Length: 434
Ligand code: SF4
Ligand code: SF4
Image (tube, rainbow, N blue to C red; front, side, top):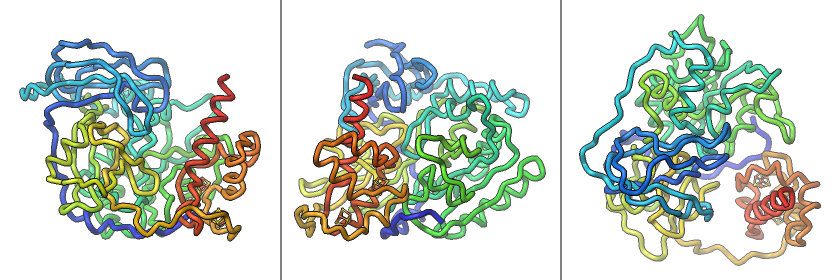
């Protein structure tokens, strides 16, 4: 059980029972070179070049960076700046689809014959990042720092954000691929112990997964853990606490307590990269909220949001809000031309913020304190942030805030706490680099 957290209505029944649909041939894709944690990739194509699906178009720029590949075949129509959902700008490669669906040649490999370094290099070349939203380069996570040992790999199937069911669908429909990905991860980091973590609301999914895990013994010991539903249990540090009882100390990483956490779709992408030589060019996301037919869609990375809305015949009027990601941690989209990124798990159409009263003064009710899964003091950090006391925020561990939104969710005064914490963190980052 995690400390703190909340239990919002899940709305998952709206989309979880529909098989994954495909929308893989949009007219164009827009592929930002900076859609992961770390340095932006460097473009290796220019305007006018012809590319095929799976071709390298952006080379990783250093260790903490990620390669980028064409998700459709066609002609590069521009290499120019675009906006990301976060509001930042990134250089992006736009490809116009030529409809030929040409792809790179790939070679099948038996991962059992490969050394750990070869597995990690395969993941690096495939441009795989954490697909649960963080978009941290996966080859970096698989490269253990000196003196660290991975005791346990956790496959994160919690998907605790309301509405989102894409990971659940992938695990239901591609169980063998995901489990093989887990095996590859365990071999790459040299551990024989893993846990598959699901939340209790995933109707019958454990019965589908269990036989696949049984087959891995005795080579790999995998426990299936069903956890009580709680948001943000799918967050890395919270999941480690829920599964092992270990707490990742402030400023430390999961590997410092012997654990590594991987998302379901990341595991599948690793399997496809290592065994088929196929880079990360597609993902499954949930389209949900106020839409007639909520669904899970496999889309090409870089597909503009408006193309997905058109494909699914979703009409937006001015009163509806579009959110990329889940309703708790997702980002409101100012426009529909923005593209789907490697870490995009959902597109939600939500109603206007009706019934929400204006922000009121803090009444010191303490609800935010109880809800914070990082054991922070949100009301006090918020007070310091409003005063512009960034050093005070740092001393109250604002950098440990995972921006889960639990504090703002329970706050009766409707204080925009997370926005303040993001602001404080940005100011502290700036001060550090100045
Ligand atoms: S957003 Fe930050 S401060 Fe608020 S509950 Fe989550 S971790 Fe705690
Ligand atoms: S929940 Fe809101 S009103 Fe209550 S203590 Fe926290 S910030 Fe203040």
